[in-house]
Image (cartoon, rainbow, N blue to C red; front, side, top):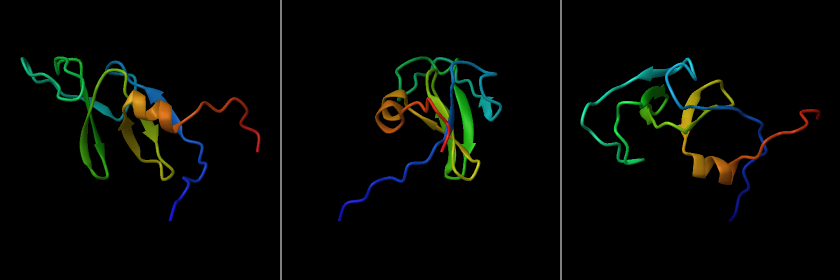
Length: 90
């Protein structure tokens, strides 16, 4: 069986630094490299989700889900999954 994801409009904000999204809190590990982006952890953030906490790399998208929850999404996955809504009329 195959299934198609239902078309749902979500809100998303691109995160680059602290202050870009209120649910991202600062997390800093000195002299440690992020396994997701190979950069220093110093400019990274942390977000609590229903599945547990997640590291937020600069450039990640923070998506507001259908129940108001927030979670990070890597830019390449975001581009494959979402497209910008130009006209919000039904």
